[in-house]
Image (cartoon, rainbow, N blue to C red; front, side):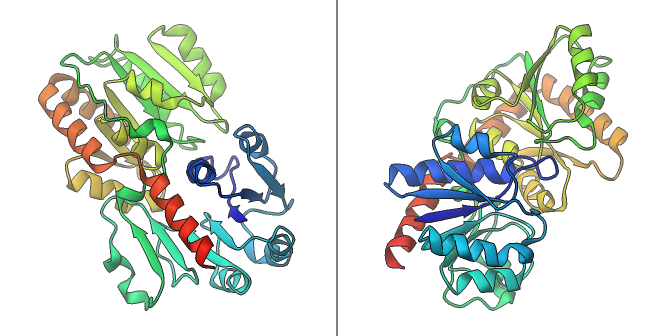
Length: 343
């Protein structure tokens, strides 16, 4: 049995769960049995809707050491041999206790300490072993770089089309949009040269500014709002340009070959999005936490630039697709299955 310890809620949104679900689907194709373990029941329906079982500990997601005893009890009861952990709240003590009774796989992008794990995954673009050299790792295995981006199968399609005329923009800031960037950018788009272009706006289940966005949709027929949808890939492929936070959504857009204006909304997004920008895969508009209005202005300026420069959009799209082939979830699943068999 493989356990997946992760969470989704209105504080951390759906990113952790989404990538774990992608890995779980591929594990299932390899005839591996999976159970999810959650702190809270907020995302349970999403898990059962995909045909997976979950257990809820009814505890705080951000107090990992308090759950250790209960989680170890579940590991023993469920006969879990391998535990995949995807959480920023882990501690050294927490992981060491769990590692005593099962093998541990950890999805990382912060490199905070030497993780007591058998396998460490960091799918940030440009990530390599050098990041971890100073921590003193010895026999641990690593899956590093964008070849291991855990996306859903639909993102592995090779099709890429860059139109000469820009007709639609994709806009998303992840699951919550706590800085309310979507509404701010939409207002500025209404006063720009992109006013008449379709805006495909995607929000997650924990989006908090629904009333303001609904009013804007009623006033502007060019805004198409998609809330908590499953087939986000289809909406992405209907767009010629994207504005996205630097999380999983940005990786998905790259896999679709769509030129992206990237924004950082959290510390864990900074190194990855800058690496994309250095490779000329995305245009980086900056960190929203510094000044939201200035950020929104830069987004509009970059969008207007890309509207006029089809050649630049084509170069960015081709580089993006070359960087992310969309097959990372299966590569991870095979590595987990191998670890499970050797336990």
